[in-house]
Figure (tube, one colour):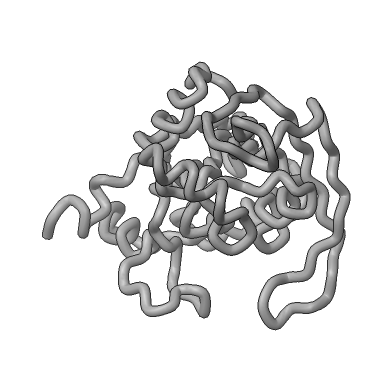
Length: 239
């Protein structure tokens, strides 16, 4: 079995006997679901091989999203962490590159449905902070350049594709998002060698359910995110 098949190529940001924080790569489905659409490889399977025991997913990341993903090795620990997530005692920070130059701070309280087959709308709150701005030499709306921004996104709720859909609502579409983004801007980045969706779960902070210690995991940028940062000369430590 190769390292890729066994999951040994998956980064582990934190691990103890109870839980682990995984550095999920972009482009890999977390688990099998109706959204898998014929996919045969899943992160959950690779992690079971990697750790040699059952794993319990505490939350989800979209296929195109990279970064911090929390798993437990015990059902009781998973239940405790699930309650922690439900109580909003977990801090989740994402980095996103979007079209346009948003305001410095935006708290968007905009209800969202639960995705396909779940039409009921529920409260959804995301706090956005603009960390940096930049321009590419691509004509846009009568201008010689196209404007982009790096955002820190902190979802206070956990709705289906919340950050992606909230950015669409703001008309600051997430770059690389084929479902809720802007195709012309996505093509701009592909021309510069950036093909992935530019959403990264950079930080996950929570209290350990057994020790009570604060766990603060940081996921590094992958090669394509670093390439995107380099287009604008942004410092990779921005978060």
